[in-house]
Image 1 (cartoon, rainbow, N blue to C red):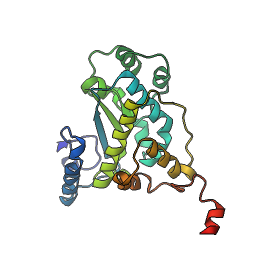
Image 2 (cartoon, rainbow, N blue to C red):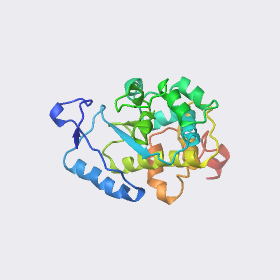
Image 3 (spheres, one colour):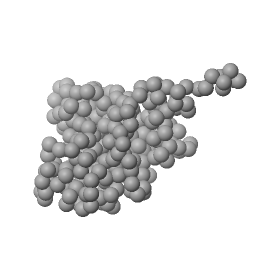
Image 4 (cartoon, helix red, strand yellow):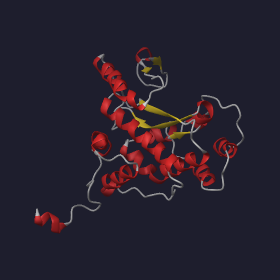
Length: 246
């Protein structure tokens, strides 16, 4: 537990839980930490968030480009899934910079070029509190400590920072994003417009693309799409002929 001065409320009560480096098999143990925090009286408010770091030592330039494109393509939808507030998007969880995305979609091929695109110059000495860190996908962390940080996940909204099941869902989601970025040859960055009427179906399609299907991820899917409008099975609602047959 470490003090966090960015949180609202009495300073003496503001703290952040920082985990050690975890592996996939450690998720359940980490959930027990979250549950213990709740039993001890831990609370969150709108100033709280979950920051999830994924080790990126084996990421290639192409994998990072795929990750940025994939997030940019679905960013509006992801922001609605995790109920990111406008105030948070304006300061701590900014969208992917369009100028950076344009360079990612160009002929970038080296880590030096990626570094220059992120910072605007070749930064050989990145700092922890560099202003570029306040993006939903933070690559300052990559150049600083070889992790990619995800910052979509806000306090007492849908991402539930001390709800063990929702924290697990967050971890599953970011790991799946990274795994797909490393596996595929190329990701499209064509932005999908957000439609609240089809959001549940659209995000379910994304989860299928990320291989978050099957019984292992049943609860994860429930936490991620539970509050979205529409049907997870039908983009425009169940067809009338099927409703009549039922």
